[in-house]
Length: 65
Image (cartoon, rainbow, N blue to C red; front, top):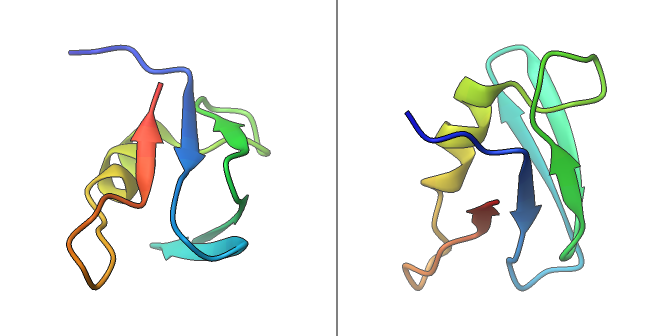
């Protein structure tokens, strides 16, 4: 299993709000959010799900670092 410490939104709009399960994450363009168990961080399982999202043209919206 790979270890990631951050997820970065690289989509085309200035910001993006993602809802995964009961959690809501707010992303700013090209700004990373940490991955971990703290309340302000993205859960690892959610980060993996978000990294698979693509825009209408099929381009990735997130990068795991």
